[in-house]
Amino acid sequence: MPTLGERIKYLRELKGFSQKDLSQKTNLTVVQLSRYETNHRKPDPDALGRLVDVLGTSADYLIGMTKKPFTDFTKDLDITLYSYLEHPVHGAFLREYLNAPDQLKDQTRQFLKFIIEQSRTNKA
Image 1 (cartoon, rainbow, N blue to C red):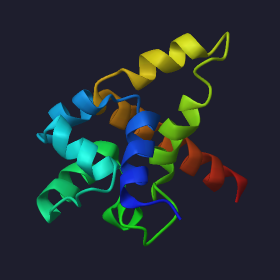
Image 2: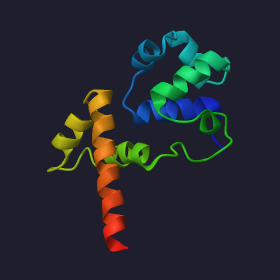
Image 3: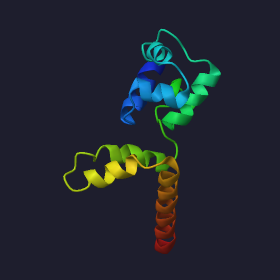
Image 4: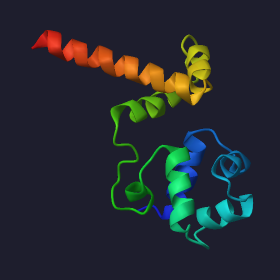
């Protein structure tokens, strides 16, 4: 089972963040993040909360209580999209989406959720 540090590093890399990027977004130092990722230190509750917020996961995932890093299908959407970045046609569009401001991505997710719900309602 992956350690807390391995899970932090996995999500950081999945999101395309360097340690410096994540340190700036969480107001932690690069040294702190490095120690977390190498399991030399454990984040305090405040730091854990900031990591959860920025990485878009749950504390349960980071501490190993669940294997699923995302509970909301719309969060899974971003991770699924990362796997298509190298696609010759869709890669450029996906890079634009993934680099969009969080507010715009949230609006896009809500729209997709609405479409899926409408599709399910129409099938019933």
